[in-house]
Image (cartoon, rainbow, N blue to C red; front, side):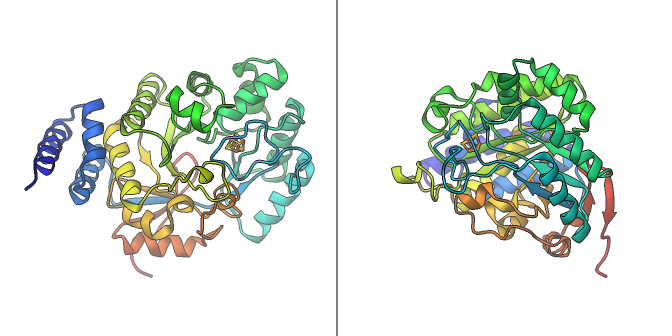
Length: 374
Ligand code: SF4
């Protein structure tokens, strides 16, 4: 056995002891996990941690529809192929009534329990446009959970309107907002943000929006966008900052690692390659192990593909997200996955991974369960 393999084996042993004793992993543990090449041992450890913390045989998914109301964005993240300038070809902005009609038609064709709405950060709209959108959606889809806007978008709305995060969130909640999406976290390190998203608000603002949302009983989601210029330490520090906020508020419903896609982006021109399958599985396993206070880790199939998302269910993930009709953000950046998966197909993949498929709503209430092969 090589020296490196021995060191990695010893580090994993240390992590195993902590997991068995309910101890907390630290920065050094997280780095050791990312640096280990013993993928199967990582997967087993993550699964063990998941079960010790109360996870069972279930693997979850949600019937949802992803919509984007505008792709006009002032931020210009270097990894983004979705955003357009206002006058650029392909730029679009739908008004609230158009979006709500579109969503209702989609619902009539194929019902869903969650609407996931994220946008570019357009300087051409105002707070009323957001409020009217949420109100129109609430009216046209009365039983559907409205999971709208990332913490970055809330920061943007606050800047547009000169209102505080709290004022923005209170009004959106009154209009019908149910939860926030998890995007915009990227990687918290200022070094990384400067390289990949220099126009984006600092990490502290993203975290503060979530803190305020949780205090208003608006749950949210958290993410990391990985596989570009970040170091292993920066990944772990990111996860630890999320864990710290979750200790304080307990408002994150789930963590969603997002594998970067670089086609059609400006990072692509710099010769970036994006993560491999091994990176994807390590990210799932390590986040399950470090985020001991976040109940659900999602293997987002849009970003890593359904076959690997299925494998990730043996690496600490317990959710493969959803049917995700019409995803556009990852597909603009070259994701080759389909844009929607029928619930039946998700059920088949979950079952074939040896898990019990459970359809959930956004808040993880169980809607349907497939106990045995029909
Ligand atoms: S990732 Fe979001 S904020 Fe960044 S440029 Fe794209 S749409 Fe804008």
